[in-house]
Image (tube, rainbow, N blue to C red):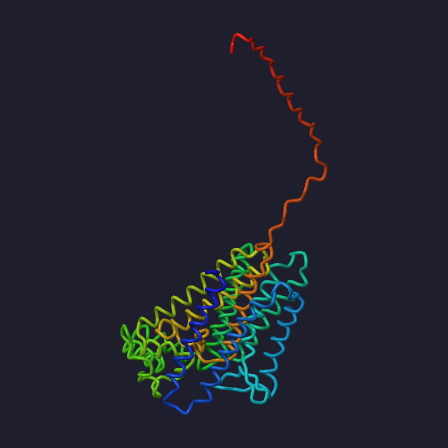
Length: 390
């Protein structure tokens, strides 16, 4: 099966799992509108993926990509500095336009990778352009950080750092800058935001005494442990009855494991690793360096976010507020990740240097060859037959 088909069908599998278990997690409540909304968002995500088969990503001009990054920065500023931004759970992350509400920081995931690819493919002599691109990266990370959305800001920094390490000559100065940025973010967040301080302190205490874990983490572990190997069956979760907060988004995995057991986790891990491995193969075979960096960056973001969510649900990391791609509830996240893989699919099927065979050029001045001389046939010998032979 082609790599793009493997990615497409694996994502469809994750979306299907998400639709089933979001219905299950919200079924005790009057949440029909929320469930329908998620189904609509899932359908839009599938249409976006199918769009990867109809448009050629190589026709998108880099100027458009640059201005997309500028637009994300403007939207992040609008969220923080205007009445259009809305605050939920002590964080100003959402931009509301009537009944429509979305997270600009989610759409900034695309911008972070696009800008990183523009930086890594620009010439080192164009210093002003490279400084501008670095400034744009810093602006997106900073504006996301002060929302505050520490998890997303750390994710952006980690993705940009990994892409840089893979596609650029490693310089100690840059490595120290990235490392210092992450340490500074975590230190500032610890002292500036009480909820971050409480989460990190609670997590540090739980490493010594698991009974001191945060309430969400405790309930997540209870649900996972009660699921055992085969689970309690779809719809039979106990934790979804107000015991586990955010059971339809950040902690949807705990509900899945409670109802489907270890088998459900293995199925999800299989689909995620299939998507990652196929995307890496597509990046490795891509002939265009810019698109190769973009595909790698999208894969890195998908991989980091997936495994962060799994580790949070299993108490290996403190809660981050990052959902499980294609499974957890969240329209902005669903559309952004669908767009990422639509780009990857389009790149794979439109990678012209791979699919078009260029015929060999004819020799400009062929060397004339002497005509070959065919030997004359031997003359037929005449045989004299005497009458005595008859």
